[in-house]
Length: 228
Image 1 (cartoon, one colour):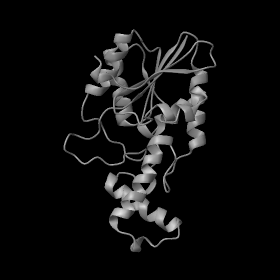
Image 2 (cartoon, rainbow, N blue to C red):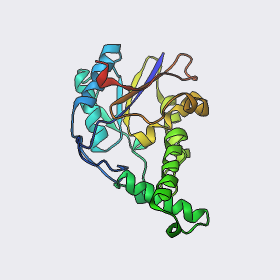
Image 3 (tube, one colour):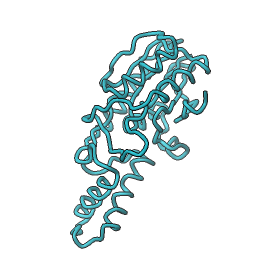
């Protein structure tokens, strides 16, 4: 059996703060430890001790991995791996959701041949919201974001191929990048039809392979800190 565990980092905004779209160019630290420690406690509860731990080289991902490892008794060092860094949100990097919707709406209107000035703020927001919904439902990249989809898919596929027989590999990444991981199952469209591909902070996803080639998702987006 081969096991690949993918987890999203913990929170970078405190309750009451306005969250922004934090991508690869915004390196925020964690503001809590519950979700990172929850990942470790949950894996320990399942009897899954990683033999290798990777994390994107950002404070939030490395910090989460370190907390999880500590709860697991530090079975192995956390290794930074830039392949699984968050996506680049382009002009929406570090902007609020409302600002992002307005910007996307204006760009989409222009692309459709409509002057954004002729549309109301509500109409622009609706266009932007539709683009974000496609991102969250099908991983269709909104205009302006710098996301190399083919490369991210290749990175997850390569990682799956690297997992050795009997190995339990934990990789801590981010929301925008993790949503492409189910490509390793070979049926991404089917996966998207059955699952919410947006993983919550501290969420855990578990894939296993018995034959070394076919990967099955056993758990997706489990809020580990609520399961311990």
